[in-house]
Amino acid sequence: MIARTLLPGLIATLVASTALAADAPLPVMTQDAFLASLKADAQALFVLDVRTPDEYAAGYVPGAVNIPHDQLASRLAEVPKDREVVVYCRSGRRSEIAGQVLADHGYTKLEHLQGDMQGWQAAQRPVDVPRDPAACSAALKAGEPKPESCLPR
Image (cartoon, rainbow, N blue to C red; front, side, top):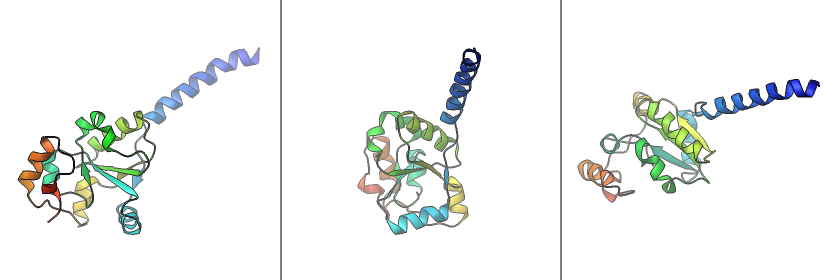
């Protein structure tokens, strides 16, 4: 009798907590931890910039790959599941959207870069600027992954 009355409540609680966990914000990686991780093993992290191609072409966190948040669901094959994925945008909103898209597709090694690009620049962290910003932006808009014009100067 007790099991019959408690079981529905327990199931409802479990379902509600699972739904809340799915919408939880990404864990934050501090800028110092990010830089230390890059220094220790540059290949350990996949740095995902989910801003627009024009924003990316104006400057990006070293090593970042640009996949705009609104294209991420159709470009998941470009994001490795076996590496820690560190996501950032300009201020945080698009990072959270991108993180949810990735989590919904089974990605579990996800972190959000503390402060996003605004915080990164405010802390005077290193920023890579493409060799040819206009060509970089055009190539990214055309869907070219990792265009040579986007390599840093």
